[in-house]
Image 1 (cartoon, rainbow, N blue to C red):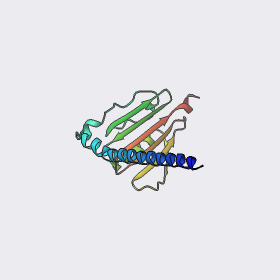
Image 2: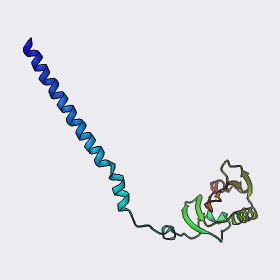
Image 3: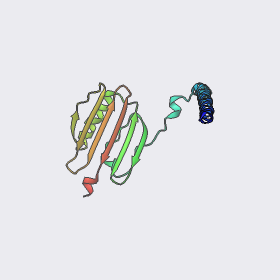
Image 4: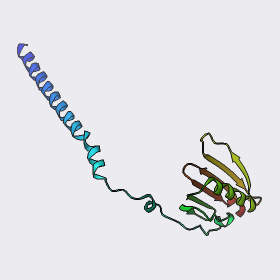
Amino acid sequence: MGEGLRGNRGLMKSLQLSSHVFIIIALSSLVAGCNLKEKISSSITDEIPEEEMLTEYEWPTGEAAKCLPELGAGVITYVSEDVDSCELSIVEISAEMYEDYLVDLQGFGYTLLHSESDTEGYEIDNGSTPEGAIVSLSYQGDEKCLELSVEISGIRE
């Protein structure tokens, strides 16, 4: 029985040593990883000017886009078109330009509904035409950004 206890003590010492080695390895990798974020961020030093980051697009020409008055201001930074819809993102749009565009939409036959937003400087408007075109707009005043989409599947039905 005494021999069995010595065998267990040896096993216990071996387990303790293993756990100490594991803790040392874990702490070493943790310490090595601490500076990893700093090393990565310090290696990224070049800045790209904002004007070079924007890709400018032309006003879309598809059927859905034809149901919108063309906005002659701002910079189009995103366009997505398919048969029944069109989405655009336009920057450098002042609040006055946005209000003028809402008037232009009404001239295209859209009845607009303004939705209240909890976020200051954020405008949401939706509208439709008697023919079935649906327009959605969101304007972020502080970013001077207009998100615009039109859906014309109701016209085709």
